[in-house]
Length: 132
Image (cartoon, rainbow, N blue to C red; front, side, top):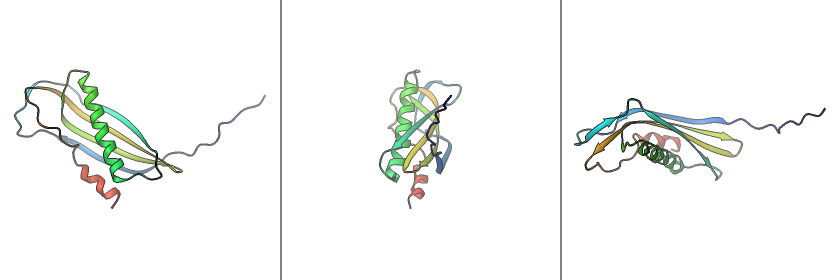
């Protein structure tokens, strides 16, 4: 009896991690909210970086795309805004490969009438010190 072993795979190691705790996204804006979800909804999104190294723009884009994807997901449940938002970003390395994982969370709600303009995810400036 012969056993075939998989080639040894290098583990992914954590290079960097950043977290933004829940932030209220709407202040004094006049929002007409007719329903709010009972709990936060979270999504985890993984991005493989194809080039040799990632830049600040790659990391920022990963957070923005994760937010957009979560907004699409809550829209299927009848919600159209996130009252609070938070995110956790982890950058992984495996030999020459890079991976960015974003866990984006928010409290979905449905607002009627004119919605405020779309804003950026909260506290994106914490990503600047990754590449300074």
